[in-house]
Image (cartoon, rainbow over all chains, first blue to last red; front, side):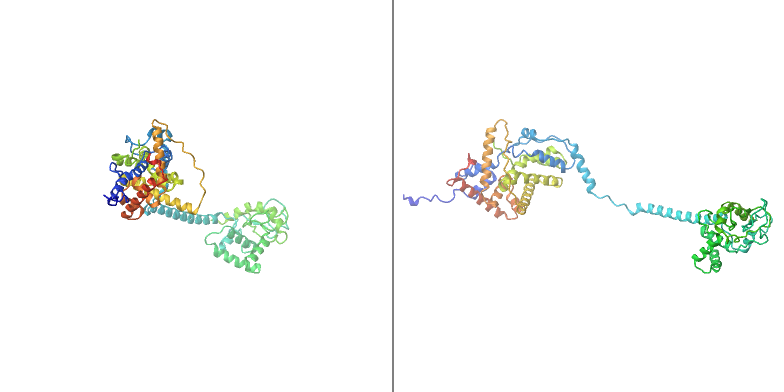
Length: 328
Length: 195
């Protein structure tokens, strides 16, 4: 038999089924040509080495960091091929409490808090509105009371009506008499004396009275004072020579003797203005029935001294009778 | 002594997975010891310089998604190796953007000293040789062979992972095996894998 009839030896000694069997791990019928390959693949399937299992602690740490809290505990299944003893010696076991709380905290921060419903807001809004309304009512009542009380207790306020003016003039014998303006005539006796111009009634519409009323309205504004203040300003503007508040107030300061010089305080109705020196008239409230509140006489001469020496003591004494005189 | 690393958990896989999903660290360690050697071998063939790092990143990703995982052991391994492949691609992109010179490799000092260490050392040598041998294959062929042999995945799953057809996967695997056989039996090629 010639050698040429011998089938050729080239070509693969295995087919695709043998290759699939190698890939599937089937052994026993492997062609001889593929046995080195089979050994290589078996080496790839070999048991785990220590190097490949050395990072278990890292994996456990990652698990503790990101895994949820455990709820199942039971016996572990047996694992073949691994090296539990060697692995355990390399494993760093941390207390389990650390990874119990960490995910819970993350979950708490991860989710947004649910927004409150409008139903929950409604009582709060109603309560706030009621409180605001109560505040407004209290403010209104307090303002009204302050105005009425201010009318009663304001020393520098005088009614602008003629009847009120007459009360302040001391027409009644029981009324306290304000005798001022006797700066040129110091009192010679402590008794109630008649001033140099005793018969002159106190002009309630005079410049000093008008200025005191004007400042009184400005200092203690009350309801209904606007009209009176406007009329006062109109009268004072005629006297001051101009309607501007600056002129009016400058005029009043001249008339009243600059009450803001830090010595006399606020001018009050009935307070003697004018007068010069420490001996200025202080005939206040003696009930003579003859005196009048004559203002302006002394103020022309030395208004500052008159206020500085007598203004303080006269305010309290003269004001009370003046106010009390108006009472029925 | 060489034991197949596939399907170590076996029938208990569902219970182990459920416990791990519920937060049991010990059960998670069982899954890790089962799959990590194959994962590291797979990565050592494809990315020898960063296999351990990518494996660690893979496990972090797996732990994050573990409570939501649903499937059997095959799906678990497919998910694990798919995650590893994605981390590997991320690493490749990162290296392309930030090239760096690797430092010298630190020597392996974790060879177990338990009885049978000699045989284990021989097995390790064979494994190392096999890994080095597969590293000489084209990437696609080595990838397919490793996923079939080391990860134990089916052709269909591999095709889905790689985004190709099952026929292409089979062809790539067969070509790789033939090339491997040629390398092992060719002149001047010696391998300790067949020891």
